Image 1 (cartoon, rainbow, N blue to C red):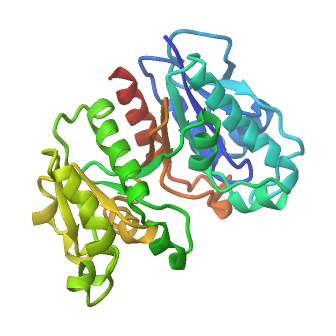
Image 2 (image 1 turned 90 degrees about the vertical axis):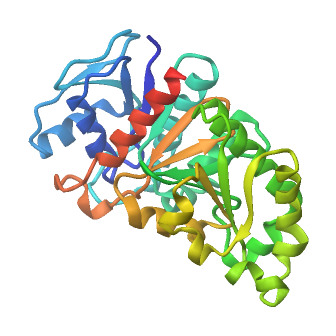
Length: 322
């Protein structure tokens, strides 16, 4: 069977640690970690683990308990735990390049990603705003949608990594149509939800309160939402975000569309941090990710929690079955 690739991310952080925990699994298809195999061997010793690293050479079945398939990607310089090194930025990007290339060329079912450190990649002189944007550019698609999910809640974002003062200008009818089209399509095609029910946050407090707290809901957001409702799509008009995320409102919702990053994600992460995952919608391949950062201070300590990576792998495998 085709493999699922897992990028190990920033080598000085917890990415390699949590990837090693994948040796505890036996899955229906090979799980292959993209990493420097020698660096992983050192991490095995530091963490005092019993893990056999096996170089991946096209094996079609899962590795056994205590084993981990690895495709070797060489680091440029030796890794010091917890210390970012711009000279290894190219190593991190090579993981992403290979994972995207394999998915696009049909050599894998997709990718799950461990965390990277954006700042050190940019410090190396490479313009990089994140996994999501990298995969979007590689795939050549005009728009992707970031969606985070727990077992009980999915939150998609109309805008992602923008300064707050730029958000209102970015909320345009064109962007909303693109985001909502992708959200509906992928909920149907990837998650097999035939008639998704979507709740939408307003941009302003109290969803603008009839224009007294902003006109974006009246002039931009609601007209777009009305056009989908007229097509029979189960979609709310813009709702106040401070009351949307109540159990009563969420009980029948398949997804929530938030207008900006810190509107929806704090609620989701408060419900399931460490168990939540990031899914990139709109790509021609499956991409899931952990919901946390590199946690440099925890690297090599044995204290890093790997639950989010396992949930990301589980979802990627489930989507591959679809």
